[in-house]
Length: 569
Ligand SMILES: Cc1cc2nc3c(=O)[nH]c(=O)nc-3n(C[C@H](O)[C@H](O)[C@H](O)COP(=O)(O)OP(=O)(O)OC[C@H]3O[C@@H](n4cnc5c(N)ncnc54)[C@H](O)[C@@H]3O)c2cc1C
Image (cartoon, rainbow, N blue to C red; front, side, top):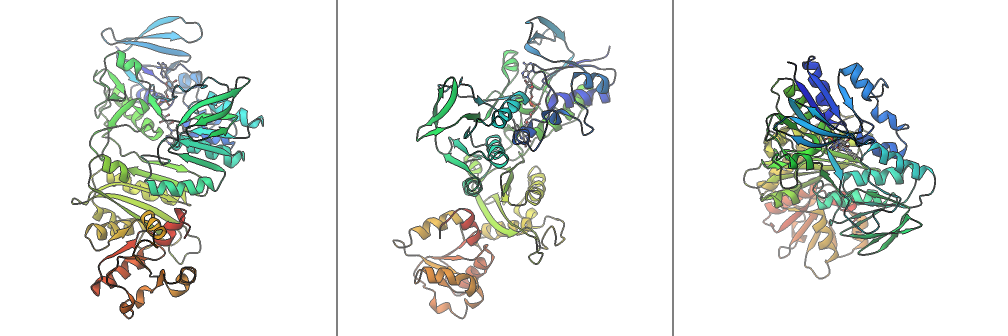
């Protein structure tokens, strides 16, 4: 008898698994079930529909050949039966059936399965705050919410938007309103930084500079207390620090797995409810598979159960599950959590652990921060890319990489290269020696990614004693109380303005003059050496060490990082 495969959830993972199963096993009877009307759409495109960059909402649900991926499409093109507006309410593992309810009529029925796929995804977390029921407050996780948000701004009744949550969904939505509609946005984030767990605190400050330069006000370390309305519509957001006028509020305070059915059926779940699966993406019941936002897969950096609610995971895992329910034995070994976001003038991306996450996980980790041109220095078009590598002291193991750059394609190329290695347990030396393409219009001969590995090696070997750009800014602010000598290792013409502005406090000794002018450098004070990006200051540090002056620290990323951090020096 042909296998009956039932898939609950039909947005990203579900349709992929269903179509793959039918391709490999045409005789299987595959049924795709979703409580919504619209299925198989690119939820990641929602911010670009709200912004207007994507014209019609249907474009998110169409094939590249403009065919709508609806129930009829899946029946005729894929041989998959689809039940929309049908909610699964229970899984009966002993009988191998699920109970479903028609969302419109309330009619209840039973659907038998041989293999069941759970692709119920996640829902926006909405903290139960007073006023949450007011009109004008919405999440941005499905097409109906996307249509609502765009209609609100298109109607011209929105003068200010508040986004609750500074994760990547919240920030993409903030950019959508501010960039294309010119509507000022305030982002309120509970954590002390935006993109917590995605970017280091320092890189997140750089992202804030970009947002605040484009009418997105960012309030971190701030808690929303309630929403206040007028005539049933939201009018104000009250936080523990201020009141913000807003005609529209987007809830983007994280997502939670839709795992109630799995929990009720007694399947094994992780602490926060994510369904636990093995490498074949089988749950604790071998006839039930799960993936996407619903499931926990191995974090290949920590070796522990991880959670990566990302469309890239859902699509790849859907194919693995489709193969397996068709009788194959594909595996999904785990993930390192590669992500990216386009802001205004900058894009940010990363993979693996940030320095804060690595330390929380118990690693003795260092962060290596660098700024370098992303193309040959002589090529006319080039941008400064900022990258950070997180590595473990002692083992030299790479734990993560993050970056921010005006050129998103170039940044993502570097992150992707390291992400692959991260999943296979790489060392700092592997990054130094990573073979990457060199051609002046796209890369340097010693590419920024190799240079990042080199700097990490130098720090781990104790040759380079670093000072983070944030620490430099703090030391500089405290310079009158402190007893620190600031040495600018750039050419005179670059250092001149600072020497004039801060006579007696800012000292210009170009790197190639260190040996000749060593007598000017005090031996009894800590010395902070800096240049534009960190290369000449490292060489100056070596030059000072050759003359016995070792109480020195070289500013990682130099003046360019200090400026990107918004330092007012
Ligand atoms: C605004 C936005 C931007 C994003 N951008 C990116 C990005 O740039 N890159 C990236 O990698 N990821 C991004 N994501 C995340 C990505 O969209 C999700 O990871 C992906 O959609 C998860 O797919 P899924 O199939 O696991 O679940 P979902 O997409 O959540 O789909 C689950 C479906 O199951 C249905 N369902 C749930 N319970 C039941 C039930 N009991 N009965 C019937 N149906 C049920 C739900 O209604 C839903 O239709 C973004 C998400 C959003 C919201």
